[in-house]
Length: 344
Image 1: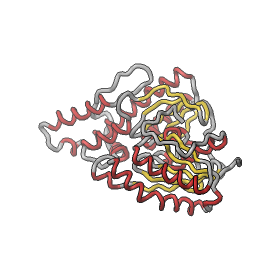
Image 2: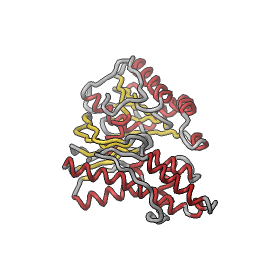
Image 3: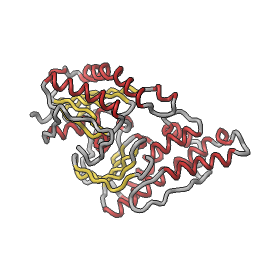
Image 4: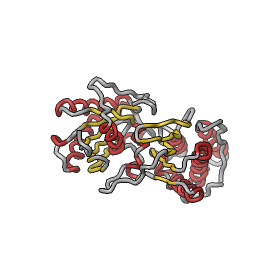
């Protein structure tokens, strides 16, 4: 055992094939190969995703090792995403990780993908690392597949305070973008167009969910009905009001996210907040969190944009703490598409 191990991490939970090499907590390389083929279908096609992973994964891992400058025989552990995600995609990453670990005689570390997101704001390529080690933290984990409020007690101790009871915020962005005829993934496109629109031009039905849980299915339905009703007498309604629709949609989703976060801050008294997941790249969410932190004198940690989407560096970060506490996996460990945030 060493204090600053070299860890190769592999991430393949959805449609991004990624590999990273970390020296302790410092990221030496983080390589991501995205799959543009899904743009043709307006969403991720699981079978196509797994096939693309099979093509991409060896070159991605090879490039990550070369970019890091660390020869494979100097590695101390191999990490991979165990779940949640698409089962076919997870199997590709797990299979290569197991093969490498067995061949090299190294410990194998299976990482919960959600845990990676929770520590993503701690990931850094700087020699000095991140300054985000302040606990407890209230983290808003928000992506295409997940929307949760999580109390992060320390690096490997998480408590879910609230979660979506149906759709995730990122899915709401993508599905609403799709009905407007926008490209996939829709979240970044909506964010870009929203900057040119009037966020108060349209209003949509907002969820009324008790406690700290979220819901976005009703908001999606309200958005769809608004487009349907206002397009009856104007076939070009969406195109003529695209910027305003995007701005109003974005405001509605961010308002829902922020309202629950503010409630959680009041109820827990926690003074450190963070955000993670793909939606953490949204400009209005980042701006809203920055304003909230300034008004309430909160510590705020935002992940670098490069680490908001799925990436192997965040998997390696969690794996580092597994390594220090000797949380290793046997080679018969299985992937789990429905792995819960409380599972290791």
